[in-house]
Image 1 (cartoon, one colour):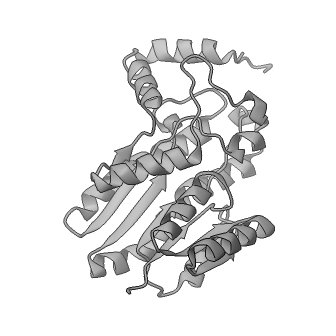
Image 2 (cartoon, rainbow, N blue to C red):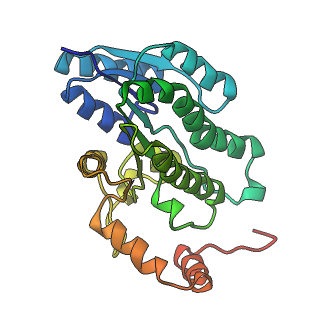
Image 3 (tube, helix red, strand yellow):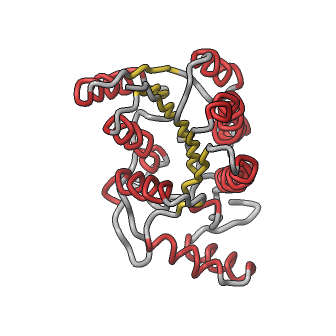
Length: 265
């Protein structure tokens, strides 16, 4: 049987872990990256024991160029069939109040890392005339919110970049998908100060679980859908708010989030 391999960044938990589980179930050997060694290695061992696939782990920091380059070197000439650019984080503060290094780290993780990884693996995929690239964006790419400008901006880049990449690769046999999840129950929100008890449905705000996001992503991939927005509620929210004139949208979101912006904020 031909060996097939998937590289998934940010695979310690959440959506990345769900992709790892799914591709292992489908017989892929895995390369998983993360920053929390104990969790990452524990997950790798669990997947290996359950599915019998080879799982390599790379403990790496993707928020700096050296870390990105290290991962590319670790991959070497190993043929990759799937690349899932999932690693990411958020920071919910006003731009001018947030440490600039944190914001630049977000740009590196969300923009530099995917671009450099894709650039490294694409020649092999194109030569073999097959491959899958999945980039994880966010509904924030479509619906920017206050205290989120760098996150929204980088995720908007991921979406548009992925669509452009799809155009570049049409006819090569390499598929590109960008996934724009809405609210998803992962530790992403906990790291930003939202306890799990607050992660519950409220009105038009609906939460999904990572496995649902991955199910929809791979279903849409089989249909060759480039932009995947998991969940009908998220699609409806994006469509409804997208119909508003932009100034009306800004006023609505500002009021909805209850944020007060002033020079003394």
